[in-house]
Amino acid sequence: MRGLAALIAVVALAGLGFALAAALAPDMQDRATADFINLDGDPVGSATLTEAPGGVLIELALHGLPPGARAIHIHGTGTCADPDEGFVASGGHLNPGGHPHGLMHPEGPDAGDLPNIVVGDDGRVAVELFSHLVSLRGAEGRATILDEDGAAFVIHENRDDHLTQPIGGAGARIACGVIRAAD
Ligand SMILES: [Cu+2]
Image 1 (cartoon, rainbow, N blue to C red):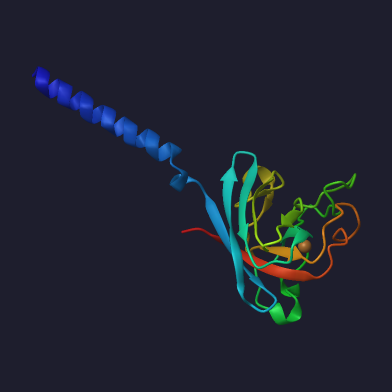
Image 2 (image 1 turned 90 degrees about the vertical axis):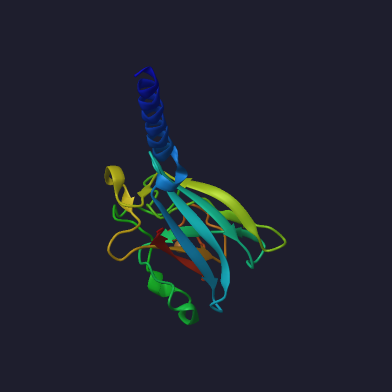
């Protein structure tokens, strides 16, 4: 009987261990991804978005971009189907609150605002950004990335001054990535 009790205890502990591992495993987190294309329609890298308790962690790994500081924003329509037109189909910024643009604007920011990225001389950038303004699925009333019409990252030709309306002087759109729920 003692052996059986020990066996049951081991099985119970193993079960608890699996439950804990499942709760902590990164695979259990809500994630989304985006594959970027440039104005020629060629792939230029990707992003992984992971829902966090207070926002969304954005991991960017991009290549084939012009070196220097570039604006990146979350735009409010999930399409990059028009590279020939300069990605205008992705619409304006994700901004359900109707706030002025700019991380440094006294009445901003809008929910699509992000810090600039700095592309290296090799055309690459690998960086993590964090936005407390958004949620993948609308947690705590934050702007929803995966809503009915989705959302897309847009990279612009210039840096964002985080103040000027409507997009901080960021200029034309040079790359775009539709944000899609991860499987
Ligand atoms: Cu933008």
